[in-house]
Image (cartoon, rainbow, N blue to C red; front, top):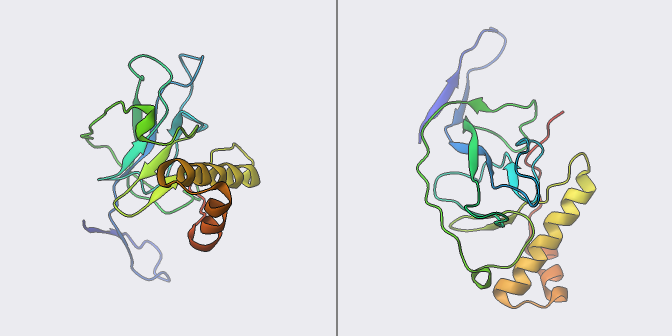
Length: 175
């Protein structure tokens, strides 16, 4: 990892540094029914998730709807904050080395939306175009489902646990 240094073209601004955190903005599979769609908006199939945790070492679980899955990746960033506030991070080109496998549905909760697994966290993606309250509801429901299926929580215990230890954040804000 390294730091990028923004060029200061305005003498009134301080020097700005930020970490290099390479990530993929777009990772998705073909959705149910349709064979050709845009990567935006994101949905149950993945797509333009724009989540900085989708990075080196992450495992992204996405429901497969078609033979061969029809994987699409792109929109690489050297760094991006939560929200991609103005519709951009530090956009770069690059090569991606990834490993794909199809897991038996009994090996991971049968969630409807993508789930990202890191070394320390499981993250559900509540994708709802132009409806932040709906997106947060989806992410919360998917997290509770994950806790019930993977760790044997009751739905009540999952909700209590998420209220105490769950984090809720926004990852894509294209305005």
